[in-house]
Image 1 (cartoon, rainbow, N blue to C red):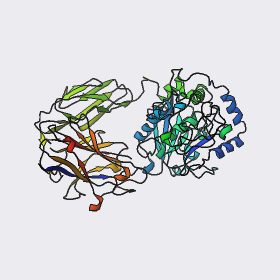
Image 2: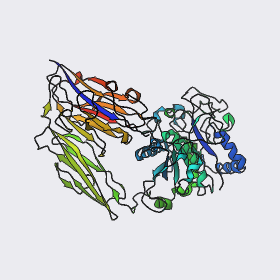
Image 3: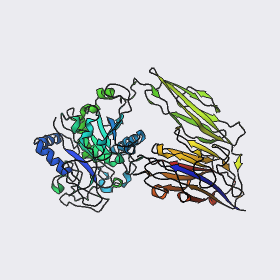
Image 4: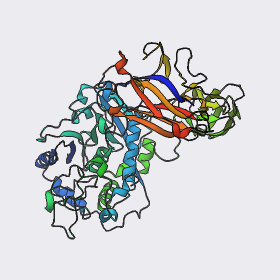
Length: 598
C-alpha cells in the first residue's frame, strides 16, 4: 500500500491588538533579581503629607480578630467592580472577554480555587486560606442603567498613566471597585528602575476616587489576549485595596501585621524556594514566596494566609472603610444581588455540548443569555427533533436525511422578559455527518481550487457564531490560485476557529501522513496564537491533539502592526504529521484549529 497524504493550504492574518490620602502600592517587573520597586518611596511621601496615617492604621489593626479560625463564617462577600479601559491605540483596547477572564482568575485566587494550590509547600499549607471574597462586574451603572461595567475611553494619558486617568472616568468609589486598565504606568517620586505593572491604595475613611481603586497595565489584566502572565498582578493589587501590606515591609523586624507570614528581608524575585532571608522568627521558616503579596513570579504565587484573610474581611466589615461595598443595599444598587430582576432586556446567547456530530446524535443546548433574566425562550432547530422548543436548556436529536456526506444546520434562540426581546441566530452551527460517507484516495490532495467551503471534504467550525471564520481566499496561495484564510486581525482573544474534514476511510493505508502549509504573522507585543491539529475516531465526540504550534514557533513574520498577507513562498511553512497510529477500520476526522492569542 502507498503512503497516504493529505495536502492543504492555510493562511491567517495576525490580530493587531494590540480627602484623607492612603498608602499607595505599586508592583514592578524586575529583569534582575534584587531590583526594588518604588513602594517605599511613595509610602514615605504619603506619611510625610499625612502624619496621622500610621497611627490610624495601627488603631484599625488592633481591632482585627486574628484568633478566629479561618473558613468559619460561611459568608462570601461580593465586591461590585467596574473596569475602565483607557487605551491609546487599539493594541491596548482589550476585549470584554479578557476583562472577564481577569475577574475569573481573581476569584479563583481569593477562593483558593486556583489550579496551582498543590504547589503550596507543606510548611505553609496549614495557613493557606479561602478568603471567601469574590469580585463581580456590576450590572447597573451609577444612574441605574443596565451595563456590562466595562467602559472604554481613548486617551493619550494611557501611556505613562498615573492618577490622571481617574479624572477621565470613574464610578463612585464607595459603591464600586474601580479598575483602570492602561498602556503603561509612570509614577513620579519613585526612584525604581523596574517597570510599574500596577498600583493600588489601601482603604481609609473618606478617601476620594483619586486616591482609590487599582491602576494596572493591560498586559497584566487577565491571562488571555494581551495578557502575558497568570493574572497575579491584579490579585496582588486587590490585596492592597483590601488593606494588605507587602510581607517584606520594613525587612526582618517590621512586617505586614500578619503573624503567619514569615519575615522577609526584601522583595522576592524569581522562584527561589530555598530563600530564608530572616532568621529572627521562631520557628524559623523560609520566605513565603507563594504569597500573593510578595514579588515572586506569577507561577510561584498561590496563597493568601489566615491572617491576611482576617485583615481583608475586617476592612469589608468596617463601614467607614470598605463595608458599604458589600452591603445589601449596594448589591441592589449595582445589580449584583443574586436573583435580582434587572430592568434590562436579556441578551441572547447559547452553546451546545457538541457542534460536530454523527447522524442520530442527541445534543444538549444551554441558554447562556446575559444581562436581564429571561422569562421565555424560543428555540429554532431546523433538522433537529424537536425542531422548536420553549425549554430553557433543551436536548435535540439530529438526523442527516439529505444524502450528503454531512449537512450543516442553523440554530436560533429568542429570549424575552418584560423589558424586551433579543435573538441570536448562528448559520451552520451544527454539522451532522454520515459515518458511512467517507473520502479516501492514495496521496489525496485537498486544495481549494474548485470548491467553496463547506464542501464534501471540509467544513467550518465557528463556535462563537461571529463573522470571523475560515473562508476561501483568492489573493494568496502557496500554489494554485486559492487557499483558506482566517482574519485573525479582528478576532477576539481566545476565540477558536476550525476546519474539520469529513470521515476519512483509513483501513487500506499502510502508512499515513497529514501535511499542509500555512502562513501567519504576529502582532506587536505579546500575542500567543496557537495552531492545533487533532484527530477524532468517534465522530467528533472526543479529539486527540497530534501537533501544536504555539507563539514564536508558529510565526513566519513578527511584529506586524497592520493586516498582513504572505508575499513570497518563504512565508509559507510546511507541517507534516504522522498518523500511522490511526490506521484501522475506524474512520477518522481531522481538525485544524486556530486559537487567537490576541
